Length: 317
Image (tube, rainbow, N blue to C red):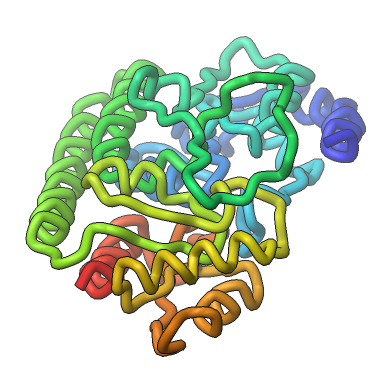
């Protein structure tokens, strides 16, 4: 954390220099479009779909970097300092964003913390039976799961909030933002309905994750039960003997045929869990958490969630 704060402080002079040349629409090369900055890909893709050609939308955490280990560059902080609208998640991994905003004031900038906007819809981190924790009490503070995009219901709610913020910032294009958001919401709700139908007709209702578990919102939305090795933001890289045996035992007890991981699994844990099951034949499947997805990957938020549905349908068979 100290390295990140040091980085943010080190670019303050550069930011002030950039701001002295103007910001927002006035600094946009004469295009007249508002500048929007998003921290991670799902928020970026939502905003692109809503903004259309009426705003310039930029992504900060790119290049395949996991959001939990991201450290901002001077260019990133300058973008945040000079934008008209900043959209970020607001979880623990975004502490560097909070520092950048605090150290680089911009009266014309609107900052949207999506976790705050969720309000009562935000989910507290869970530590379920058998889950291995880092052993820290985090000063007794309650932590909220920051993987808020892994819920189509959250997406439908938050995209409307983003559209409202764009409209307030750029009233001239408010009609376009509103229309685009409504159209995108229909696509999200249609896919949400497919998830509900798939889960309601599934033979199984439990997932066993031999990995970190960033899918709390998704399982909560559809009433899916789960067991996992670690919480979603855990820094653990090795599972204890007790954790492995617990997960292996659940697979045998429930007759589960699949072991779940994320797209970037903690190395070797799923294989070790499988080797400790009775028949050692469980197939390993991955759900994509989009934590390191970029605009260059040739996918978008909805297409990834469609693929996740296909994986989920198989996993719950």
